[in-house]
Structures are given as C-alpha cells and as structure tokens.
Length: 225
Image 1 (cartoon, rainbow, N blue to C red):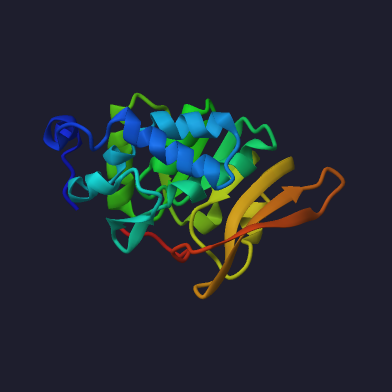
Image 2 (image 1 turned 30 degrees about the vertical axis):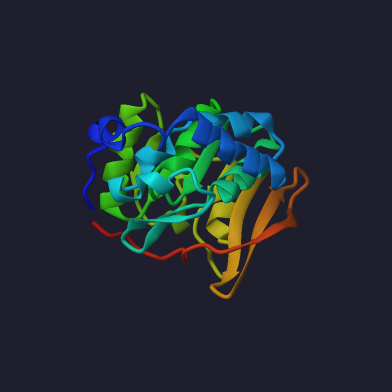
C-alpha cells in the first residue's frame, strides 16, 4: 500500500477536501440521527482524506466505508460517529480501541481529548497509522498485537471500542472494563451483525443494548507483520 501523505494537499487541488465538503458530510450525519455536537465537530475537523489511499481521496467525505488494503476498511463515517457517540455517553477518560486500521477512529477519539490506546494485528497498517498520528500531532498509544487479548497491562479502561466483528463478545475484553465502563462492539456472523453497547455494572455483571445493525470485517486471531 503506497502512502504519500505529505503530498496530499497539493496533489488534490481545490474542492475535494474543502470545509464545505466536510460540512455536507456532517449535515448528512445529523440528518441520520447523530446529535452529539462534540462528535460532529470532531468529524468536521478531522481530515479523513489523509486516512485513505490517494486514489480514493476524492471519496473521503462520502458516508461510506472504503478499502485500506489487507482486506480491511475505514469505517463509514456514520458508524464512527454512532460508536463514538455511544462511547461518550459514559464520560470516559481512558479508551481502548481494538483494530486501529487506518487510524481514523482513534484520531477522532483523540481529537475529543480522550486518552486513547489502540491495538492492531496487521503491522503495515499500524506503521502507516502511526505516521498519520505524528503528522497530525496526536498522542495515541498503539500496540502491534492480537486485539482479542486487549491491553491488560494498561487497563482497566473506561471504554473499549471494537472495530471488527466477533461471533460473540470477547470475555477478555469485557474483563478489562472499569466498573461502570462501556464496551461498544459489533457482534454476529457476516450475514447478521449488531452493534452492541455493553455496560459493566458496579454491582457486577453486564447490561447489553443493541444500537444498530452493522457490517464489519471479522475480528481475526494472531498478528501479521
């Protein structure tokens, strides 16, 4: 996957990544039920075109998922916004993301002032995401590892966000939630997935709520260099 991030603004010319284009995306998100102005502003200001290959930059502000190589995608902006909105409802400070991918979701969380930890199993994706974080001056802690294991040594976390789907919730991730913490994760088979919000109850146990039907790439085991 070839990345020439530093040349993007000049190469794209005018209009393709303008504030007007970003504003239209935000208005579409608002019309489709995203109401948290903090989330909308983070998406309005985040340069999503820097998180996709140059050949796809003209589509960066469409409300659609886009390929980023290695069989992975950058999530649809509405999905990023909905997951972020659900996560913010618990007023978290320290957040774990499983599946760094392009780095876009982690960057949106960091732009909201959260202490973001992110785990990615594909080494090349993580290397490119780290370059983007540095380019944007963002502090995001990242790790190349099997995301299903979480990041226990840096837990517990106020919120955990999973950007790939497993057939069932991963117990090891649930165990890394702080009391009162929230896990946002797609669950189900490829043909039928639901976005779940799982809250760790102070008295023990978990409360689950279905947020929306979704389609995510699978949460796979192991690591890839």
